[in-house]
Length: 259
Image 1 (tube, rainbow, N blue to C red):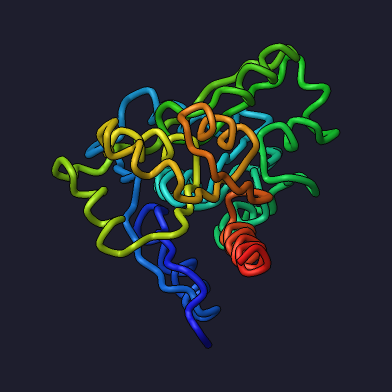
Image 2 (image 1 turned 30 degrees about the vertical axis):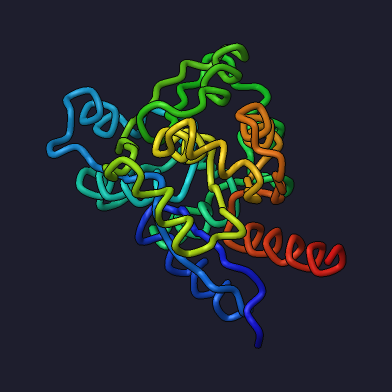
């Protein structure tokens, strides 16, 4: 199969491998440079330890991503070899729910988009006044779920089980990679990934790249990209591997038609 385009995958390692392989199988020339690094604390902080010890006191537990499952369930299993009963588990997106199933957890998720807003729309999270809710996530990031459930009267706590950081690349390194690899399409998995993309490029380098096409996971991140000056932004249905690959395929077909 002839090469379709030169693509940069920016998922954190090692999550990028599956997407890279899928794109390569469809004829894309694929390069990988993570825009996020995920780091667990060297020791569990006291607050997180207390939250996990009190896990059976929560009515609802929400995992916001696969990374939250990978880091958070490792901690939880250390204290709960048998998970507490009477707790409702939730996941943003089918991929996150599948990871939870590997731990014996049947999580409720939205049938619609892989977003916080879609999960907040499900019936189980409408009447939560007085309920204790634990949100498992990384440090920082969006607060939409916490804010919405708090406004509904829930007692919400956040279990931060890892932190995200920008890769430590030398000045000019990312720009050199993009030029050397002659990248046509950059797959950005999150708003934070986009911010790090801009951080790793000087203003002059960013200006040179404004005509590179970005594939982003949501309308929110698309707006961020356009506000930053990028003129070619393609929005995937969500941040999953399947959605990002589909968006790359659609962009490729559209480019061939225009060409």
